[in-house]
Image (cartoon, rainbow, N blue to C red; front, side, top):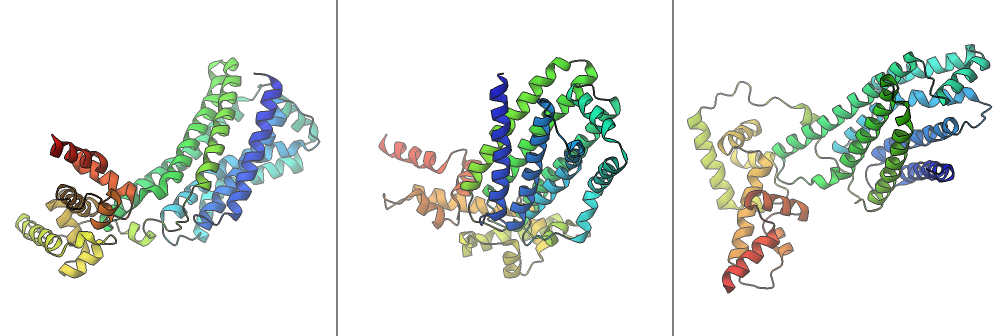
Length: 384
């Protein structure tokens, strides 16, 4: 690739990450804490891009010590993305003093860099910088880089598991849960997994004697970051103003299922019929905000017991249990449609759904067809 074009990519990347960082700091959409945590991550990446530019193009730098500062960021990315995940998925999430524990490796790394700046002479630092620029990196430096990447992957794994756990818990508690609010979060985490995987490959190549591949992996990282930051910016501009998470942390921590339950199979059968009859006779599924606590109060059954009944009696979670009734109601409206002008959106609201994406997902799950396909199949059948 032409050096001038590569420099332009560096300039553009640095500007974009700084721009998106500033945009997030003042963004009114989404959750303020989530925006600020992500803004810090993007600001750090912009500093790394500047450092990378100085090294790749061997630019003379009078403050050589600052080239090592960005290495400490490797211990901050993981915790910041993990807290960003928690602030997005949990309602009323706030940072706590105990969160500082996640940043202990980062603080230690900062102290080490400060010690280097204070006690190591400039000549030695300049020599080390030259070696890094020429890809003559000491083995202990490469090992340290691998450990830092493993630290990041650990937190990315925890973040993905947190989302999975929250989604599962939310579906046990609520009949309405819009996962579209997590799309941006999932996209960002997946992009960081790809980006740091490329960085891991870049770090491993010298160990296996493939130094010629370093330029290729570097170029791939730059191009992917360019795609990543532009995609994030577009998604942020189209982001809804929703500021609530899925559940509270207290709800999430209540993991105890049916320990000590004395419900027999006969009891579960009785309760299953009772719950099903209540849903049909009172059409409770038409309440788009119905929660398991609402149903628990109405039936005078403890919520944990009710959850067990639904899980074991209907072999599904509360979310799917209610949505199955809603889909059946929607199918009935389509099949017995008196008003030909009745729209799919009207059917969606009349059957208890309040989100088009949730309606489409649930309908396809239980019928293998989208609402539009189902409606069209009925029309074809009536004309044939």
